[in-house]
Image (cartoon, rainbow, N blue to C red; front, side):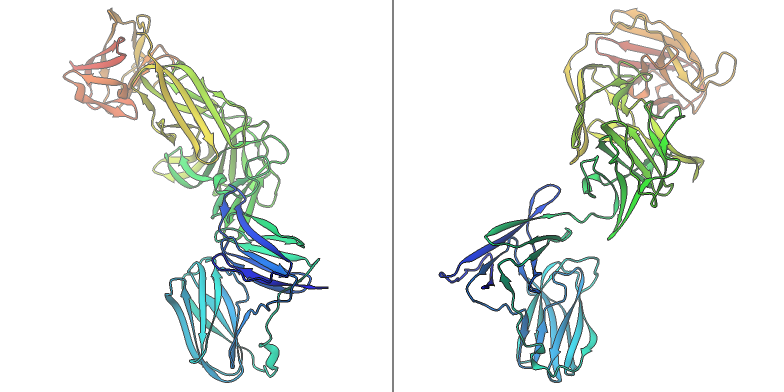
Length: 594
């Protein structure tokens, strides 16, 4: 059987072949298995499984030519009269590798490592007896390195490909004499030959920095382009992965993020969350912790299941909560296709999974603070979904996004956080600003009443992005039938006890002057307490907070904002006038201390 002999074709060199010989060219490219982008390869290790020989080729898109004509022996060993420098045992390597030097006589040697810019980053000199000597190479420098060996007369070099994996230094360390008796002169002098017979099985292993190595096995008999599907090495953290998501493997796009504990509204480092579309079905998903090369899989434990008695502020659709286990590798499953909020506290060892139906709530919305105005959800899709509301009449006032008619989900009610704060809860609402939503953030203020279109868009690449676009004006509102009063804890109730947001003061109809509406209150205020204006005796109607109004009058400075509420800074008896100019939808509060 004729042999096919290896030629290496470099990207910037000219290949001088044998015109009379039949050849086949094997070419190699890398592709990101997740986003399908083409990658620059660093090396391809080729192993002839049948013949028991191997070689390595380098380049961003390397290729080799196999020829039926007898040709070049590939020599992986560099030789001099007295020493042999052997290629490193693992090449490419991750942070550290070994090289061997065979000496036929006692000799002084100098080893040095340089990078591709020619900068020397480590060296080692000493005198060594005859024998086979082992050295450990450690490097934090990525990509191509050159190891040079010199006895003062002759220098030889080998290329090293490094994918750093935590190494903090560049060093050459002598391990010791590996073998002393090397009387067989051919033991280290015979060049290795990479050969290929038709029908031989070849293994190709590609390396790219930041990706797991990928392997292809083939017995090529014609020119072939091999594409390696390279999976990125995930960074440390917690991931949602499974066949019912867009991510069957750990993917940075499905990495959970630290979120805020609603109790303190500050980040809790063990509290992780991810919004992700999930399909129903038994295939399910898991939460996976990545820590270096270690993987820990979390699944539901005994006691995990549908919550049968949710707290008042929790979502009003069925959701799951409970402990998790690393022993039970069962899958988490969901009852229907949709967007889900997956929450994991690895200190509490608890997971919660909530179905997400987005809505808007607040004084500016049609339902006030009592009833959600729901957005219409798009068809289910694993990579992108949207929620839309058109022809929305949005008044001047405050509002927020929240999902499934809930404010929060409770994970713990006993953990002492200090400062009188107890428990762990995760926000199911978002505020701050439409363009920069924050879990549990401050109420969003609408200062421009009108007709709006609201969009909430999700993609696996960028997460959520919300927009609010004004499409028209609304006619002046007739407030003549609005019974407005004061609600809070800054005054006494009719029975003489202090109010606690449980009894409205001074509910009345306005005096009307054209499109202006005026309510007047005489009230004794308690210092350092709060209030707002509210329509009727519940939260289903209009409410007016401190941020909605312009303060006026000689006692305006006696009031300030407190999380959206009016805060009383100075106690006393006051005349408070609330005026709404419906033509411009502007609100003024005039305060006079009697």
